[in-house]
Length: 563
Image (cartoon, rainbow, N blue to C red; front, side, top):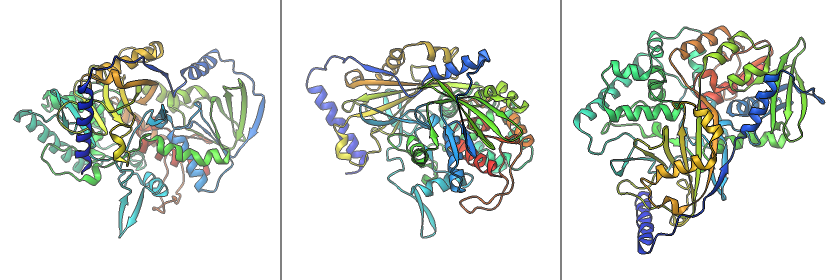
């Protein structure tokens, strides 16, 4: 029996069992906030605002200090290890490294706390390809690269709850009229034409490293919002508009009214284009890698050798980074003990969000101050909902990994992914507990960050349950626990003018020497914003937050401090 048929049969069986008797009463819900300790960040903010930092009680030395343990910081550490440098330390605020790619477990079921997939990378992302090869996720067979199918998203991959039933895919198609389909096809042709006229690279380092100004097409797209661009080109279909807005919120934390037209087009043009219904598509390019714990699977493996080697220090907030004549001083607060430790090193990788880096680097260089003032960040929320048994399902497409609601009742709602979808033992799917990870982007919501900080966990849990009760009416009877993860500054929003601004910084702060990379690719320049002893590495410097951007920038910064 094929997986799709099995899942449909399993869902029907579960529905029949529930219908045979009386529905149980909704259970008392357990839960709370998890993953991100907002109080630690606020403690550091208040210390910096007062300007009276605690004196260090201990001084340590290393060859390199890495400030920040997100994907960029972990990538910088890997670059140092591959180069034979082991005398470094990585300082991370949270108890677990990984940034937006952390993982968790709810009642023993692994699940993501943030990013939950990685598209199969193209040739621009050579460093990411090298990582995947190192982890055994891809190998060359008969001269062709092949990915381990156990880690590729199982079919069915995605579905949309639209007009009272589930449909395959996320682009609204069920009973749409010819006018809608015509706009789908025209938008697909226009994206293809733009892809042929100018390069849309991911990661953005490949654009900035050319040391050339932005192409006129990029400049024009960067100068306006995506919503304005769509209006200019006559794209007014509500279904197309909804889908494009969803895509922007999914990757950038805000919708078409805020992000630039460059960002809206880049979402498709840097990957696999836009495909209208009925058009052929390259399934290999559409594939994504995913795991029950999301991209936490990757960050856990990046962090493992650092734990073993003693280079990883979690629960440490960087308070100060200062350059001197002979090196760098980094003061870090250990939250468990309340003590401050000073690290001295010849070089430092600043893998912190730009707004944090601008506060702790003393003195902050002009380009860093300007970036902190210019960039905007989206708050974000993940609700991990533990289920003790499968849910009833509405008619239509079978249960999928990614499940999206058309016009979700929650502002910024993005649907959910099922942590149990990647299980290889399909026989366990009938009754096994699972976790639904529901996502909500709050970049378009007034006072969204303040709401995250002030509202109790049950407010967000109930909102997620209410939204998902539309396609799953028995959700309240199956949910046993909800863990809420809050990101006050989850990702940089690529607003109009931001690409040109960051490109200019890339041209001004170009650093690094020609260096042979670990995967044997040709010698090339390794650009990263830098000062004499500091290299800055974070997805913020690309203007939006995805794994490929953060990893490549961290890798480049790790090599840059060696030169």
